[in-house]
Image 1 (cartoon, one colour):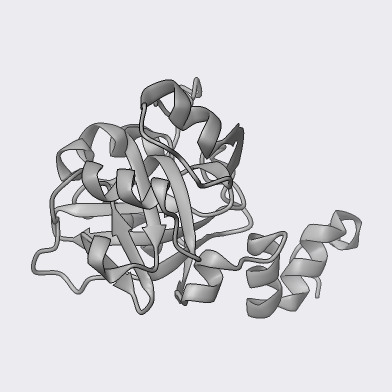
Image 2 (image 1 turned 60 degrees about the vertical axis):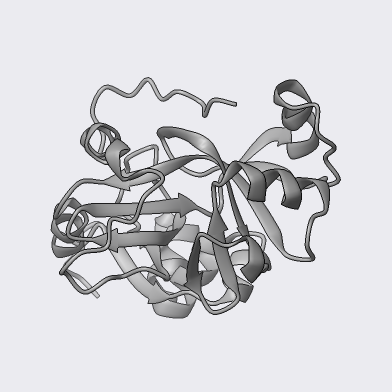
Length: 214
């Protein structure tokens, strides 16, 4: 399966797709303090179409870069339908296929089964792209699982630069945020963080002509 291609010529993700491919399938944790297991909430003024109003889970983060999965971009494809086109193995999972980000990647799962884990992202949330793990979990899905194609990637120090410029709001992730999100996860988080900003996003007419006026 291939992730949808993005035709935007300039975006935050462009250089990440090139520089983070080497991180796929191996740990990129290094000397920096890892932000693995944290949510990246797009700032309200982040207009990059790949990440506008997204909530992403950082699966890996280190001095080599970062890898994340966007949690709120469902595709118009069910996993069972996509799976039947690439595998003869059974699929018992009926959930939607998620677009994990703009970089091409294998089918990746977030789930709650430690026995099929490559990375424990945060308590109760495990990541795998291992083919045997994926086949097993697709055939006998656990109670909590989400399936992604594509990923979000950042090269060395790229995410830190974006954090310094205010592109992202960082909050700790919990299993409920991953597996039981509200209908609009981004708005729900923004409302919790800054109710005034959430009201302005919902009602742009409330914004004063002079932004300095409160």
